Amino acid sequence: MTQKTPPRLEVQHLIRDFAGRSVVSDVSFRINAGEVTCLLGPSGCGKSTTLRMIAGVDRQNSGRILLDGQVISDDSIHTQPEHRSIGLMFQDFALFPHLSVSQNVAFGLKIAKSERDQRVAELLDRVEMGRFAKAFPHELSGGEQQRVALARAIAPRPKVMLMDEPFSGLDNRLRDEIRDATLAILKEAGAAVLLVTHEPDEAMRMGDQIALMRKGKIVQGGAPYNIYNAPLDRQAAGFFSDINVVEGRVQGALIDTAFGAFLAPGKPDGSKVEIVFRPQHLKIDFDRSGSGPNPTPEHGTPARGIVERARFMGNESLVEFRMDFDGSTLRATVPAVFLPKVGTPLWLTIRRDRCFVFDA
Image (cartoon, rainbow, N blue to C red):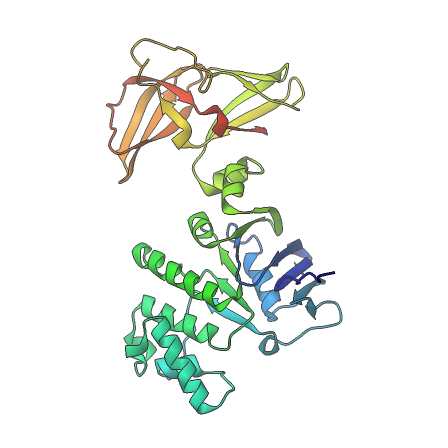
């Protein structure tokens, strides 16, 4: 029988309290070699505390941390950070200001000088920083410092790479470039990567898996496509993008709305529910905008809204409507330029296959 390879990093039921306050509560996940998992959530949800426990700079109250199937931290074992084969990257880069670029990358490498010099040169070339080998950190831009920090982190060939908001100090254009380069290098190195971030776009761009964290717990995990298209609740849906919400009550497994009846399987009669959908799935019914509602199987009954605001956002236009049926505001995104005048009435429909029904 073939023995199953254990995950590179496994976290089991981590709990951490501070002064009687629960910060991390029963967190578990696993990451295989060469995979990137993004720990995603708002500030204060316990992401960085989880990372610190894995790094060994903080210790859990209970739970286990395993590396290649071997326990490195539990109630009785606590392997010191320098012996965990875990690399770290942080937002502030933490480069030594008195050391050159090559000296920063070489710091901590316990190998022969000739081998060390070769390793440093290879890494600096890999991150396109070879020509800056003799420069000092203050002579580099933020993006250049980030590349050096990456080279230093992977120099010892760590089995696990922990990254705590490492790109948040970079401007948007440079951030995308550095993120893509970093991801390629980490994949090539074969490390298991745990990236802590509060930015959904970053998690979607970087992660093979996303673990959505809230109030110290992982509330939902999965591949980016699945977690985006099958959110656990309204809050999870709203964390990844703007959302629209239509409220209603269930009668006979149906919710009656101005957009027609929606199915609500498993919801008891009389319960209050919310139909949640994203702005790109609120469609302007141009064919019938001047002639009134005409139901379709895919989109149901059109409902009339009055344009309150329209803004061009670059790749798309954002249009806000005040709905006739209840005075609520709904938002639609339209590709390219679409800027109707304020006060224009338009008929709107919803992509029913892109709606989520949650308990209110």
